[in-house]
Image (spheres, one colour):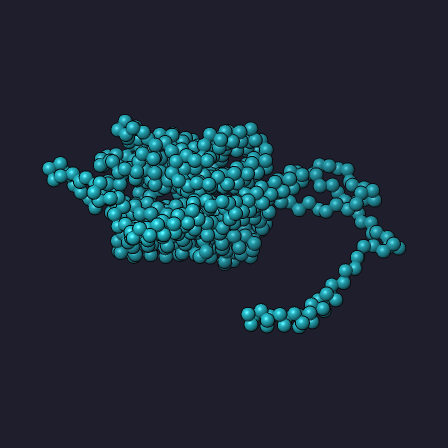
Length: 158
Length: 439
C-alpha cells in the first residue's frame, strides 16, 4: 500500500525527465524543398547478367540494389520470394504459431483436469474417512496368488 | 496417419520448386505441432501415438525442411535437384510412417525403407570417392543387424495375437535369442560403440543434407525402436542390463576420447553423436520413467544440435573446400557473425544451460546413479569429455591465425542465418516445453 502511494509521487519528477526528450524529438519533414533540384547520377546497369540494356535514370526512379539473401545467385525475384516464404512460414506460422497453440490451447495432456479431479477425490475420501491414497492399488481380497506347487521352479525376479 | 502420408506423397509434385517445397514442409510441421491434443497411447487425432512419436515426427519434418534449405548448391549446380528433393521427401514419408505407426511390422518396413534414400543420398551427392564404401557400410551394417529383428517380429507375431504396441506392456518374453534379435538392430542404428563403425564414415562422406537427416532423425529411429520394444522384453532386459549399461557408458567414454583426436570436423561431430546416443541407450536400459524421459529429451535436443553443427561445418566446407581442423582456423576474424552460431552450437552440444541437452543429461545422471553409484565416474567423464571436445572444436576453428591461403571467406548469408536460427530457436524454446512434460 505504501508502495502504491509512494510511487504515485514519482509522476511529478518523471515529467521533468520526459519534457526534454519530447522537445528533442522534432518531427520535421526532410523532403526536398520546392526550389531544390534532384542530382542525376550515372546510368545504372540492370541487375540481370547478360542484360545489356541500361536503365534510363531520368525516366525511372533509383532502385535499391539487390542484397542477395542466399537463395538464388541469379534470379532476384526468386531470391526475395523464397526469403519471404521461408521467413513467414518458418517463423510466423511454424514457430510462433506452435508456441501460441501450446500456450493458449485447451487443457492438453489433461493437467488441469487431473488437478481438479485430485482435489475432488481427496474431499470424497476424507468424507468417507479413507486415506488419500491406499497403499494397495487393488483390493487385496481379489488377488489370487498361485500356490507353491503351481510355481514349482519358476524364478521370481523382483 | 494416412492424412500425413497423403500430404507427404503430394510433396512429390513440388520437387521442382524448392522455395515452395520448403515452405510447405514448414506448414506441415506447424500442422503436426497443432495436433497435440492427446498424448495417450493409441491412435487419436492425427498421426502420433504419444509424446515420443509426436516429437520425433515434428523433428523429421523440421529437419527435412532445413536440409533442403541447406542444399541449394545441388540446385545451383543442377546436380539432379528434382531427384534429390524427391529422395528427401521419400525419406520423410517413411520416417513419418515409422514414427506414426503402432504396428511393429509396419515400423520395421518403414525402418528399412529409410535406408534406401540415405544410401542413395550418400552415394549420389557425396563429395569424395570414399562415399561408395561409406554408403555400403551404412547399408549393410544396418541391414545385417536388422535381419534378426525381422525374424523376431515374425516370431512375436505368431506367438502374440497382434503386433500392436498396445499389446506389448506385458513382459511376456523370456527368450535370450528374441531379446538380442530385437535389440541388435537398434543398437547398430543408435549406434553404440561396437556397432558404430559405419557412422563416422557415412557422415564424412555424406552431403550436408544427408548428414543433417542422418544425425538429426535416423539415429533416433534406433532409440525409438528400443523404447517401443523394451516393455515386451523387460524380464530379459533386467538380466542383460549390466552388459548393456557397461557397453553404453564405457562405449560413450571411448567414443568421446576418440572424438577429441579427430582432424576432420565432420568426423568429430559424428563421434560426438555416438557419445550422445550412448547416453540415450543408458537412459532406456535403466527401465525407469526418468531414464526414458532423459533419453527422449537427449534425442530431441541432439537432433537439433547435431544437425546444426553439421550445417555449420557444411557452410565452412562450401567456402573453404576443406573440413580439416588443421586448416580451418581463425574464423572469428574471418566470419565473426558465424562465430556466434559456432559458439551457441558448441556450447549446446556440451550440455550448457539453458539448453534441453542439460535437462536430458541431468535426468540421465539421476537415473544412472540410481542404477549403480559407480557410474558417477564414467558418466561424469563422458560429460567432461563432451565439454572438452566441443571446446576444442570451437577454439580450433574460431581462434588462432587463419591460414593465409584460405583467408578469404564471406560471412554467412541470410539463408544460412535462418537455417541456423531454425535449429537454435526451437532448441531454446523446447527447454520449458520438455521440462513441463516430464516434470
